[in-house]
Structures are given as C-alpha cells and as structure tokens.
Length: 428
Image 1 (tube, one colour):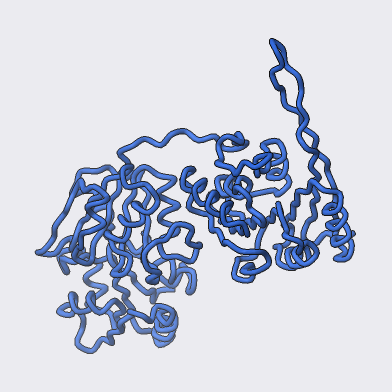
Image 2 (tube, rainbow, N blue to C red):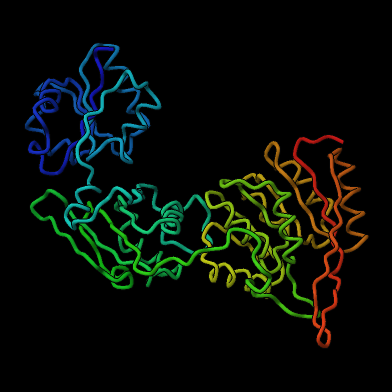
C-alpha cells in the first residue's frame, strides 16, 4: 500500500522535534488526527484545506477515519507523543488496520527524555503506563480492573521504573499507593513536568511520603528507583510459621505438606485466576498469588477473625494480586472473574451448591481441588461430583512429623486429609 497512514512521534517543542521527512508528511496531509493540544501546537504546519480530527475520547473511531480516508486516496497523518510504539497509539492502529496500512516515524519517548534529564540509563528500566480510566485512589486488595493494578504488579517485580501518567492517575496518587502497600521506604521518586516546554521542571529524589502530598503540572512522567534491596523469596512450599494463624486446639491452616500437593494439583500458571473459598489463614490463596504473579486470587472467608488474619498475612508477604471478601460463599462469587483453578478449604454447609457453581464457572481445563478432614464432607463432595457427571479422583495424605522425646525423636501423626479433585470438562 503506497498511501500509508503516517504516525508521527512529536514532542512539545513543536516543529523542532520533527525531521524534514516527518514535517513534509505533515504539511502534505489531507487528514490530520491528534489530541486537541497537539493539533493546536502544530496548526501552523497543517495545510489550510486539511481536515483535522480530535481523537480525545474517540480513540475507537480512529481506525474507521483512517480507512475511509485511505479509500478516498487521501493522505493521513496521526500525531502521537514521543515514540508511538511505546505505550502509544501505533500498536492499537496496527492491530485494527494492518501493518502495511501504516508507517511509524518515531521520536524520542518522553520516558527516555526524563531519564536523560537525570542521567539515568534506561535499558534495564521497566516502562509502564497508567493511561487508564480514573479508578480512584488505590485500596489494598483492589481487583485487576483498577487503573493502578498493573503498575503495582510491575513495582513488585522491578527495581527501576519509568511511568507515563495521566490527568487522573497522577504522581501523588502513585505515591499514595506505595504508602498504602507499605513500600514508601523502598523507593524514591522523580517527576519530570512539561518536558520540552518553557515551563519544564524536574523534581528529583523525593521521598514517597512527601510526593504523596504534592501536586505536579500535567503532562508529566514519573521515575521510581528502589533504595532498599528486595530480599530473595522462596518460590514454593512456605513453612507454616510464615503465616499468622488462629490457634484454638490446632492452627487453622492448610499444613505445608497438604498445601504443596493441593497447589500442585491446581496446575497453576503465571497468569492463572484462582478462587480460594474458605480461606482460613489464607495460606493456599496467598501462596497461589505468589506463584500466579501475572494472575489474581479471589478469596472469601466467613469468620471475621480469620479475615483479619488473611489481610495481615497479605500485608506481611507483600502481595497485591489478592482480593478478600468477608462473607459466606456463594455470596459475592458472581462478581469474580471465571477461574482457572478453585480451592475449597471450607464450605459452611453449602458444598453441593458450591461444587455445581464452580464446575459451571471453571474455564476449560481448569481444576477444582477440595480438602476434607471428615468422612461426611468427603462423601458429600463425591456425591455432588457424581450428580454433576464430573470426572473426579480422591487422594488421602497422611503426614507425620518428628517430635523430640527425651534425647531422641518420635513421629507424631498429623490428621489425615482427603484431596478431592475434578477437572472442568471432564466427564465420568
């Protein structure tokens, strides 16, 4: 296709940011698409007869505007900030048109410019964006739909980040999220305001608690770097002592040996969506959240004391991809995303109803794993699975742990546990 749509990367110093080739495309364009501010900035270089379209709030219509213009053999230019392929519009258009229909003429990303202002090498930085709808300030346990969710996941995984902000998701909001997650002392922040404009300002080396109370001129870019090293983490098989527990006669926790096998039977992936029904101390769901770092765990627990313990365990372990409902299943489950794996550690007497619901909601190939210590619950689960026509299997685990006795050791048996497992789509 010779009549390609040119996507030009521009900066806020206007024509100084464009090379001769890019400027020639702009001056010859018959349709120019861009944000209102950018169109105004480059208005002197747009042909008098050219049609201008503001894409603000109309992004979904842009591909059709381009198709219509190309069908009429009109020359089209899209103005995009910085590098259009770095959290920009170019990937969006390429996916909805085709790569042959566009030509990207990139500029320096504003993230690169911010790093340059501070002399920070960026080749190992995580570039991120919070150009999402306003979801309000971050609350611990927020679901994936929150506009800051992906950024917090990146912050957990990386030591240096450069972030494209938005008028809603501002630097102070990002700082308040770090405070809420207990990360305020782990990072410093810099904010680069109005890059390439006369009012450009770079505020560097701020404490997160200070940035949380400040306001910054828009547009801006945030840089974050870790000042406290992350401690190496065990990936799997955390000891029971890692979790706070309620201690009546025995700790209310899925023991290490049973938890390890249960997690293995759930066949988790990095992006799995997991349900934890009857969370107890939260051990299974929280360890699943660590394994599924690109996924999310939805948990529910009816006991108020245990719910509070789950929250404290989540905070202590630095986990953010985990939501908790204080309630009795199946209440609230309708709002959760369909799961890849479900763990039932307690049912509150609604076992048959829960099993039927879970088998309806599980994604193809997903696994339901249940733990029981009573013969009655085991029997009820098997009967419910039979009634649903599901394929199932039962595994009994019996572990014994060494205990000191005088100057020697004996083996003390833990309660036997039955693991009942069924796979979505499996037919008995």
